[in-house]
Amino acid sequence: MRIESKEGKPLHAVTLFLTEPEAHELRDSLDSMLGTRAEEPLRHEHVSSGDYQTEVTVAWDLPTA
Image (cartoon, rainbow, N blue to C red; front, side, top):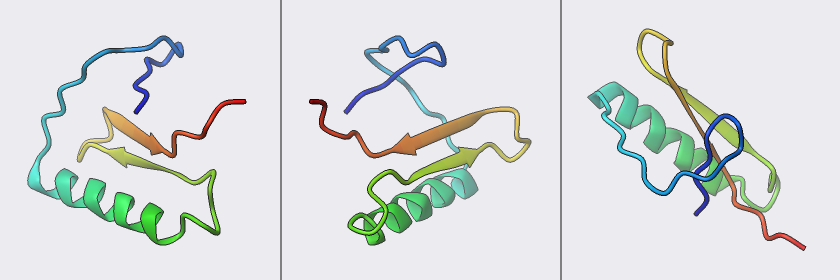
């Protein structure tokens, strides 16, 4: 797992406070990514708050060379 700030700097911990609809959206995004892993290894998903003021991006952590 890698957690980065917008500037690409590592963060060591994050706390997410989710509403139930946001939790469902996050789960659905992860399920979708898992279902297409082989076909879309670079896929990522954006999960926005209900008011679109905050966003979480989830992506595969690819091995580095």
